[in-house]
Image (tube, rainbow, N blue to C red; front, side):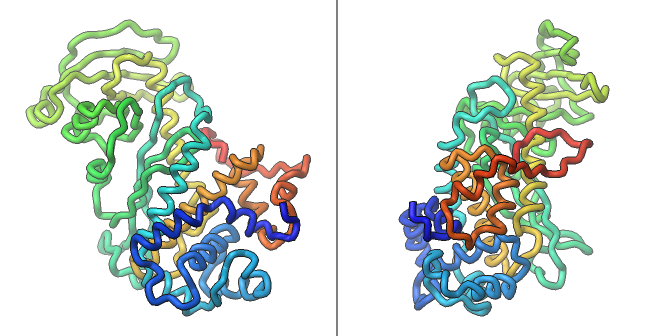
Length: 389
């Protein structure tokens, strides 16, 4: 490896530039562009994400301080605040959304053998959304409530490696259950969701497609019991039943049988009722799968704390979506580099090291090779620690 290259340049080597050019050509992103290309824009925004830059002026000031190194970092165009702002406003955000899908495919391949805490061969996804508040004066297009503007980030997380495989950015007023229409169910995979996604007609389509869902029942849920199955109450499982829906619209939307599992947490005493269309896995495995759903909540917490998706460099819808998608690309880039470089560090530690060493000229492995390097995140004891971020 060339020891004269910066860590940033070595990190960018993990981005497939040919695939990025295909995404740019798909939306004619470099049309009438003279000096500051889409690739330059991507590298500037990835740099901003990795170093937690606060504004466009902050990004430009930092990059101009090392102006002589920008060419070797891969940035060929002249970096200025107005040029970067215009690029964020005008260039189609779908370029970066499509490129994120390329990185998702690569990351899932690298993390296919990762263990997520449950002995299960099936692919398991956790699906949820998070709300990002926006200023009413600066983001008039994101109307939500009379006193609040916001948008929602809907994410389908592959629990093997915690890789976001599906992301939709929508107005906050859109109900979560509507996003189920955009998902293409994968036969044999488990989809773990909270009860906000309980729509029997939509879920029945997943059953017909051969996919498994797991969610919680609402308090006013009505059913008739078809049969009961033996359970080991020492595991916390109180009952395991095959049921059928009785309300008119629910039974018409889901005419098949469902599995109902009532569970009591031995530690907290809280009672939960799960609904699934999988009848083959033990009840204890089903309850553990739902416990893993918390990983998507921790994913949202992590990216809000360590990436720039709460304060934005532009105010238009295109600029906001561009920033969110480049943040996702940055997350995936670090995850891919971690696996390819076989780093025994969590993503938080890697990100902290990169934030202060991107301009250093050394082999990238050396930056992470200190034997005493242990940087721990502060984790609330009120939350489950299921992610090795």
